[in-house]
Amino acid sequence: MKTLLITHTDLDGVSPIILMNLTKEKFDYKTIEVCEVRETISLLLDNNFEGYDKLYITDLTIPEDIYESLIAKNIDVKVFDHHETHLYANKYPFVTVKITLDEHPTCATEIFYEYLKGIYPFLDTPIIKDYVKQVRELDTYTFTSEMPNSLDIIKKLLGKNDFVKSITRRLKKDKKALELTAFEKRYIKLKALENERYIIKRSLNMKTYMIQGYKCGIVFAESNKSALGNYLSLKYPNLDLIAIIDASSSVSYRTARDDVSVEVFATKFGGGGHQKASGSNISDAMREEIIKVIFGEINRLENENL
Ligand SMILES: [Mn+2]
Image (cartoon, rainbow, N blue to C red; front, side, top):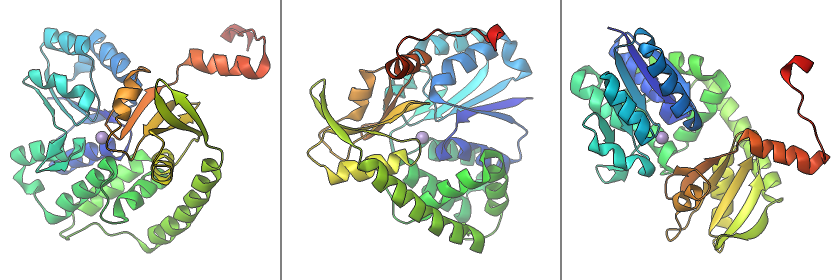
């Protein structure tokens, strides 16, 4: 039996890896971006699933035609997600997409945890339960403490693989909640100050535009995108939404308003996500347009000229 977990790169994406580690089940994992779902699964299908006979997919939305090819291949696959644009997939018996759980907004890690506890009741410990709650708070912007953001900072500090190892080790302990080291606490304090400076600096460059009937605040940023979007949408409640452009990867959309859906807005630009937090892709072709705007006429060099 060979199991593969395909999941997203953020905290809600890597935490299913940690949960799988705790089950002691043997598995491999791949973390991918939302825009890589089609390519990754198509490649697996072409290569007969690289010998895997069980597949878990978490925190990622899968297009309908990819589902059809998965079904045709008859592989044991289970999908757990919480994105609104993915709700349609609940028609498949092996898919669980939920937006809320026990009357709170939920996340992929929590839905996967509920599933795994059914198979491995020993995962029902106070410390694991607490960790899942922190991940959910970060992923759904429903904070009750500093811990969710602290975990995200530590994840960036350690990098994905070391973070997974470190948290797995800590969650095996018989404690009520996850504990941070003295070094981590100090690092988080300094990092929080640095992030605050970054957010203020970026927000000073916000420009406002009317786009498709929406009053938009536009900023450019490469990090702290959620925090920046949150900060600006609370500061300017008359704006419908904030778009954060990260030219090297994607556009993030945030709103603090209940009467606006950035998911609807993002869909107009080929993206998707949630009502208050969404995103859309920036393609290589769009990046080339940016280069043209800056440099005028350009000629693409093929690789053999390098
Ligand atoms: Mn998520």
